[in-house]
Amino acid sequence: MTALSINLNKIALIRNSRDTEYPSVTMHAARCIAAGAHGITVHPRPDQRHIRVSDCFDLAEMLSVEFNIEGNPFAPAMKSPRRGVSDYPGFMEIIRQIRPAQCTLVPDGDAQLTSDHGFNLQRDGDRLAPIIAELKNLGVRVSLFMDPEPEQIRLAKAIGADRIELYTGPYAEAFGAKQQNAVLQRFIDASNTAGEVGLGLNAGHDLNLHNLLLFKNSVNQLLEVSIGHAFTVDAIEMGLDACIKAYLRCLQ
Image (cartoon, rainbow, N blue to C red):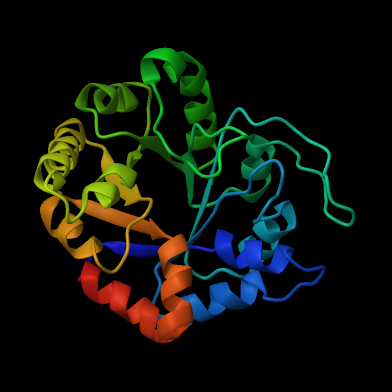
């Protein structure tokens, strides 16, 4: 069965809209786990617009499932823009202290609303290679956020990544449209390349209860999906427990 990792960024975003600790990120993590989620994902950005540094440490203390922390490995330390919120120590320092089961490296910038493209390893591979080696020495599995481009995927293996996470935004955008099959084929080809070179395969971004089943049944050896935005909306409509179970049915 493909593992379901729930991204809690949107829960934190709702909390941050008020000067409060409600809704609780750790409480929602516990409820997701109790309902059957296999993992928890967070993406602490330097501006701490949703997940905060303190959330990462709180989750690390209580989680009984796999913890995946996403972020830009080149993000430096930054003073917090909010009173009462701890400073951002730099993404790599968070990982060094917590040592999650998995670290997903993402080439996002501060101005991006959300992650919207994978790494260009012809440009960034040499900078990433020593970071990947450090993470693996810490006992952290390394996944790279990638577009479905076979040549780039081969480079991910060459610089030491354990897995890739395919950026599925283009698939979600094409789902139900005339270009759906052509776009999906790109992801099938990418999954085949990952299998050929010995990379584990994750996927995430804009996957939901409508498009997930086709994707899961089409690509090969899909180990994990990370779902946050759609999960949050679906949980409001369906209830959290029913929502988790619906996603798990897609992944069986």
